[in-house]
Image (tube, rainbow, N blue to C red; front, side):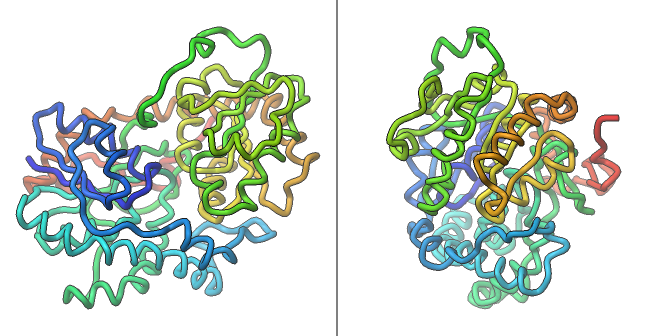
Length: 411
């Protein structure tokens, strides 16, 4: 079987695909990963063969020029299914960047697919060139989620944004959900949707990294990790400056504070507060098992790593997509979140103390970890994809239909 993976050029959207691609190769299948030039080094470092398709898109510049006004509302924003017309227009504007990326990728991705003839296309939910090319070459398209499934609720907004692209290829419409969604999210963090989902255990992949010896040592006291992901600080100076602010707010708490940061993020500090341990580019799945709580920006990768390690979460969200990740965490009882209007030194400290000391957060976080460990590993998903490629995937073959009752929670 030949499987074509495709994603736009952003590492945090590619990383969740890597374990499944490895599993397919280990089972003897051929795999190619197609993306824009900017992702090629990341793909090759993951040990998978990359294919350049299209041109790069200045997504950071686009955000700063076009999406600076798309801020988190002062009130708690509703989930996607409850958005009003004004919010939908704002979201459609944000989706236009991914349509522009699809326009850059589609021709070369289609040319490669016609030459290589894959049996399946596995795509990031925001890489619209994936389902488009799968439709044009007549093979199934599989969505590979990277977190809570907000794109199911936004599929009609996506369709409106994609209309010019579909017209270019003579298509009246495009099913961006497809016949199967591979879902690494635990049911307790997922939005219910009546679609076939193949649950898959989240296996952290963070690129090449070295593990410091101190992560094997028992912490001297309670430990709080502070992490700002890899995306937030790139898109907005305003968002970037909140990281030193948050660290300063908790630096003198009765706990060891570990700042998990990249070199670029460390440059935001005039000086790191005394007593704060710096973990420079340490993988979260190595660090978090030693932690009692985490404070982070609400990115999907950080959210899933925290859930996998059973760590209570305080999410200091900056962007609308981060709120979408935070809502199910709060509903699960495994954490809470602050929107920018609510964020102050006092609120960060009080909420951090709450998730650290209230045992209900730890109980709920451990419940999520249990759900994740019960999900089948990537190697077990290979057979499902083989059946789909052969046209044998029946609606009742056992793929989960996510409903509100499926999510459950600790009793």
